Image 1 (cartoon, rainbow, N blue to C red):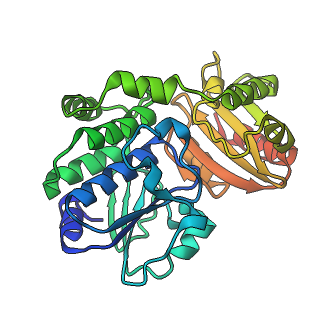
Image 2 (image 1 turned 180 degrees about the vertical axis):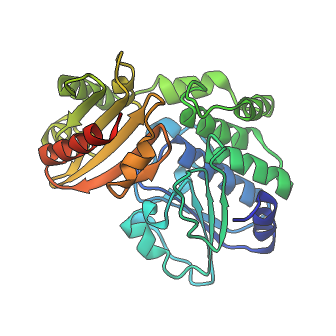
Length: 323
């Protein structure tokens, strides 16, 4: 493990960076990436941003949004480059295509806040006490001496506000609020963030929620709730490339539910499973049983098999382990 100061020294010494985040990127992944990219540009460093999946349009108000490259647009540098993994609990979280393009990297810097992180980098800065990777990037800028501009502040604020669930999730700390306050003083705009991140849902996302609520189920004791999104229904809505972050939270809002689940068939024979906890159950340990990971209250995994079979398998396992 390396300190933030040690990671800062590497950013000062090195150049030519490729910043990568996890597949199906969320607000923390995107906000951390865009902020670090903008900061490195202020240092006159060479940098690129690669993601396996498109950045959701709700983040289009952030500086650098149009600079993120997906696999079909990426040109691997001919010279030596350094890969910076952001918000990735393991190196495979970036996705198969991006992972293959990173094979020629000379150095790996791993910056993350997942407790399940396996420290895969040459340099690892992993802080599970941080509510978001964006908090670590904020501290990193202080060590490097990068001025937090309004554009950087907006990106970091987006990362923190999304990963803390608008400062309502249990991972929110006093430090989260102090950082958020400083970002507001440095130019982040609460109203702009609110409108873009929470009040600009595409119609397809609302139709996905409608479909999910029509396919909700409960365990016999009411402690587990789940929603299902079959591939053909998602395709009919035109939402195959849409990965909303908030649908699963409806399961956790139901009285008596301790574990909420969302089963989304991303392609025939492969299901993305989201796990949410109200606090008593550590869902990161549940997700790890299926090759996934994440946080105590929010985790995920991808499982091969039909939607119905995966659902039965996961629920059966959870029923057997929760008290």
